[in-house]
Each structure stands twice: as structure tokens, then as C-alpha cells.
Length: 120
Image (cartoon, rainbow, N blue to C red; front, side):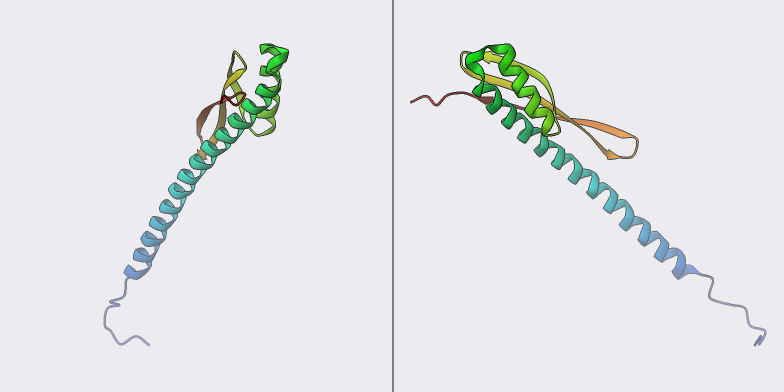
């Protein structure tokens, strides 16, 4: 029914709700990106720790065997061995994990670990 009065409701609440929804989506997206970075850092640390332990187990076989073992274990844990050094019976490894926190944005998390025999 048209009573001749202008319509005072022009959709302002709809625009406000859309803006609030967009803010929630943006906060959620950036929160997920931060969580992805934290998880990649943890994956790199775990891969480095396990790679160093695997390398230390083969340290008596020489640097090549120790680093090959470390690379294998790091790869099985989602990392890529970028550095490996045998220092006596200690093995020092550096592992990188590539992750994508946001579409089109690729980053690298790295971690270094050392393992060797217990010294008293």
C-alpha cells in the first residue's frame, strides 16, 4: 500500500552487516595465516630435530652417510635439508619448510638442530 510517504529504509543495515562480515573474514584469514606460519615453524623444528638424531646415529659412518640419513628423515617430515655438518660425532643440520600463508604468498620457515652423544 502506497500512502504517498517516501521510503525511509534505504538498506543501511544491510551495508553495515556486510562491512562487519568482511571484517570478520579478514581477521579470520590473517589469523589462519599466522597459525600457518607457527605450524610451519614447528614442522621445521621437528624435521630438524629428527634429522639431527638420524644423522648422529650414522655419525660413525662418516659425514656423507650421516647427512644422507638426516636428509631422508627431514624429507619424510615435510622439510628440506639445506645444511648438514659433522663436527666430531655431533651432527648440525638446518631444515627449511616452505608454506603458503595466503594465496599467492609463499614463505620459508627454517630451523637448526644439533645431536650427538651424551657428554658427562
